[in-house]
Image (cartoon, rainbow, N blue to C red; front, top):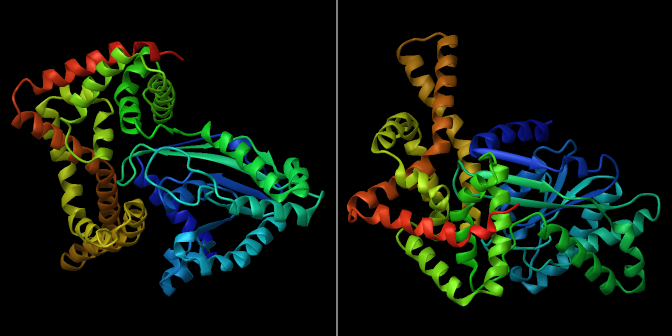
Length: 437
């Protein structure tokens, strides 16, 4: 009962946290039998929530063991069906503990349960698929051997993409791919376990790569992904597509694939011009690399936006900013204590889901007690406060980032805007060949 209520509440918080959530491929999720969800690992615990929150059956999830160090957190995670799994960085001696964890995971499958594992085994903040580790495949084959031919252990590859990793208000796109049957590979495994694991791993990696942005070019990674963000609005316009979360993702996916091919076999003169124009834009944009990526989305529209619109947005978001300011500062202080940036979004989400409703309740009770409101008035005030603050909070990170760009344009020489637009025009013209379906 606790798990059901917690999942329901977390769904609501998840919907509030992300601006747009888009799922595809529901038809690929098996209704019966043991199932393993195999998503790419981009954003710590948010990846797990993206997969399990909307499943009809409870999903057992395997997470890195270091987040279980504190007893209270460990008990809470186990309560919501999250099990620890150890990695090489946790110490070689602790890897032996995985045997028990793998057996428990296999039992979940033997009992026709849902299991979620990140086959990459880690994350690095780049939009590409890392080498898959063997833990998932050992569990899958062990479960398949246990059930023999009575049932098929099924693997569902999952692709997850975030338009922005750390803050609220970003797009989340989740693709469920076509199911893979472990029984199709059991012959290889019985012949040679290493052969079976490697064959299944290679095929799963291929399925996963088709669902995500997978930029393997490390030399030009920033340029390829940055260009895909800059050029995606032009791609959408060229194909007369709706400017939706799924189409923005598809545009980045197609463009990054074509740009990676371009940088493998470049026309040297054209590549030099593309790189020059790209860096002239990115070096001018404020913020971190991830923030520059976010500013790149519809950059032309941001550059042409009138000051009056910024003033209107600032006035509209001020109530939410002031209401949430104390909790936001506390959350930021807590997040700074963790040195792993990939965990920041998970901490931000969890702390917001825990602290903000209590803060809104406190703010509602104060006037109710001072003004002697009845329960109905206090409840209405709480709901209005909840709506205004939560709705506004989704837009504050993006607005704050865009406001930095606006300030930069007004502090710098007046021709900076014109230079950025000119560079963007040149890039779109140079990459016109990429704007095809």
